[in-house]
Image 1: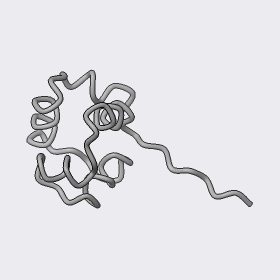
Image 2: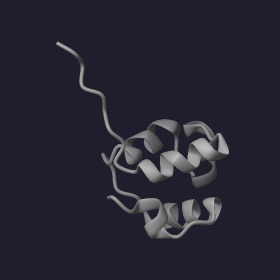
Image 3: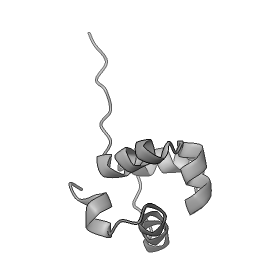
Image 4: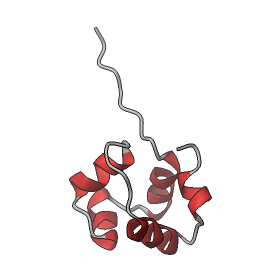
Length: 71
């Protein structure tokens, strides 16, 4: 039986990370999360805080809907 691959809940953030070649460690440091905390948020296991959303939008120069649409 093949193991099911996990899907990111926030693929637009992952795409922006790839464009800037950010790792989960480097982006986590920017917004104040450990790599594990960031990963859990990208998978939708934990909610984003307003502060984290603001930092992401500012860092990537995108608005909320550009990063979080498809939520």
